[in-house]
Image (cartoon, rainbow, N blue to C red; front, side, top):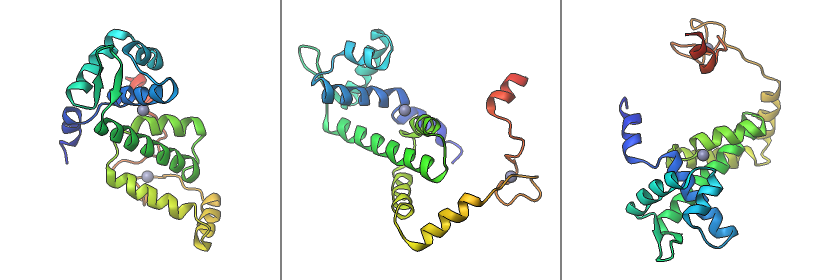
Amino acid sequence: MKEVWKKFDENELTHSSAHHLMAIFELLKTKGYARGIDVAKHLGITRGSVAITLKQLKKKGLISEDENKFFQLSQPGKDLVNTVLSKRHILIKFLKEVLQLSPMNAEIDACKIEHLISQEMGEKLLMFMGFFMSDRMEVKEFKAGFKEFTFACQSTETCQVCETECFYSGKTEQDIIQME
Ligand SMILES: [Zn+2]
Ligand SMILES: [Zn+2]
């Protein structure tokens, strides 16, 4: 498990690639075509950097380009976009409805991990949300109880949730990096 993050960088879709694919998907839907310049405009980045990423996506067989430099998503490309988008929507729902994040933070955090979570996590989240949004009696009770519940870490010795590191300091990564 230690090496998971490394493998990930090597093999999986980068966040940037995922957004390039989603940009092509969006453009095809709204404009009916997608060229390099359209993708660059859509993502707000340079044409040069878009060209590099699109070349890689072509090599992976996720997109194709015709003689007029118009891009299309291949079937695997479409499937990938569909997977990432559906995970994003489930994550946003989970973060907003269950964890009660602000709509803005829910969108931002979902965007950060939409392409990283496993299929299993997507499926389990979907199942959980199906349960959570049902009108079952026990769900109503859970929601009412959770609404009134408060919890804060006190110390690592007594905390039921955290293990060796407690969340209780309330420091963000930014606070810590700035302190150094
Ligand atoms: Zn994203
Ligand atoms: Zn704790």
